[in-house]
Length: 197
Image (cartoon, rainbow, N blue to C red):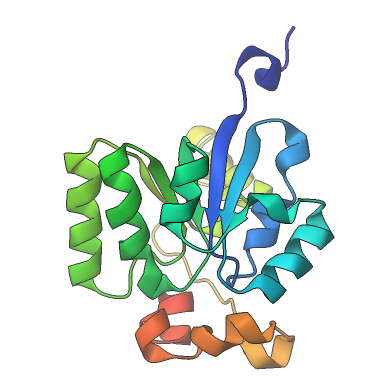
């Protein structure tokens, strides 16, 4: 039986922004064969150099703007790992080009931004995805299967989840991430948005 990546060519992906450190998961997955990173947009060359060196990419695929990227490559999809405030701009730029967009959680800093993004995705018939990291945890998938498919524990009446960490500074996020993560404008409301989304 052929592997999925042998049946389908890898999706040509561009990474827009590197300041959200969940970007390491996308930069580190190219060896799985389902994606090919063909470009990165990051105006902070120091950050771009650190991450491209860490993950074995050439600085030749790093561009300072989305416009510069599109002059050189044609991605099928983009992933946004900048500030939450930047998500709307990424969708406004790529949706009219028919390019699918995945943004890091949460989707938007406000309902107004979210509605604009939704309208653009519908108008231009693109997929607009939000990377809620816990949705791809194997343990959550198994719990879903046990509850909804195998009906192992009966009907769910209430779920209580306790989750979190001491804070971004306390767990040592890098300065480029912390700079906007704690800013209410660029993150939408700090921890309330990040964990409450």
